[in-house]
Length: 404
Image (cartoon, rainbow, N blue to C red; front, side, top):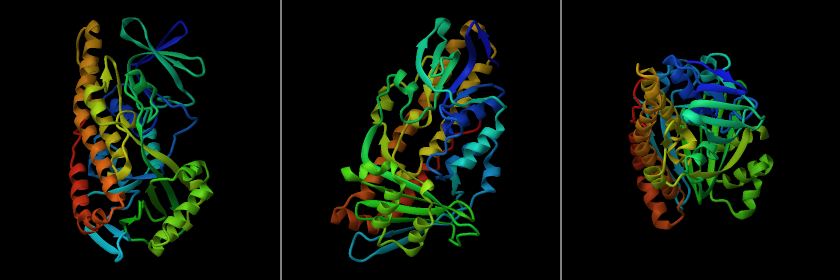
């Protein structure tokens, strides 16, 4: 499996657009099966947006399937429990549920992407390569036009290019919609150690939700989701204003939470509007068409309320590599290869359709419940939310994407 050039065009077997979690997982899965791919990344280096993410058991199954689970486990705390505090009602409520017997950690995105990239053959990732348009070429190949004028032809095109995916647009999927909520995320670095117990702490306030969790001895990841007023939306590029906004919202939070925000450098704060794909679009839209498909945020952008965005991108990568591997490695006539690829990608689409639908809708519903400000909802949430939420989280994390 290799690339060759015809005239000015470079011909590839598999091109993956986007070197994020889904793109690199797919590429490594294919590499483990002996299939070479080219990953095009528009930025100059690995893009580490969002700092870290809760890595539930379904994610570890995927990481183990591509052979990097153990090296990442060694670098991150095993979390022991989830603690939820609420100040919405007059009397603050605090409850805790144990994670005993479960493999749940908070993985730094930088370490994950670097680990994935290191395992790939040199030259797999081509940086500063932005795809501007896609068209059909003869014999079913797709032709990609890059911003720098280069043209690539490929047998298989995989879009892992995030919420504003060019490939998803080509497949006819609509742009993700704005949920009305935004998130601010940050990473606090405590040189010499933070001293926090390995717990996921969540804090529900009036109209917002926040929390923090340690990744390792020195790094603590934190987040806040809220419904911004129009003037707050303009703050997205101003880390100082974001930090002030978080500090003002968290005036009733624990001293621990406040110390985490205080310790965060302005370079380590980011904000983004929360978007999601309308779930029914996955049921009648095209996840794949011919030799083209999408994965990760290009497929199922979701709100972060059940912490499954990054985890499900890892699942996508394993399932996609497996389905594509079956198609490309099966002995058969060259002429039938396109049909085999089409069948493989269809199979991947079938496998991921309902899972994606389920995660997007569950996340949206949990977000709605957690941030709803009504008295009755607040009472029910404080009484029952933790048990309901942890049951739900562990059910969604019980998914097994299988082996390569």
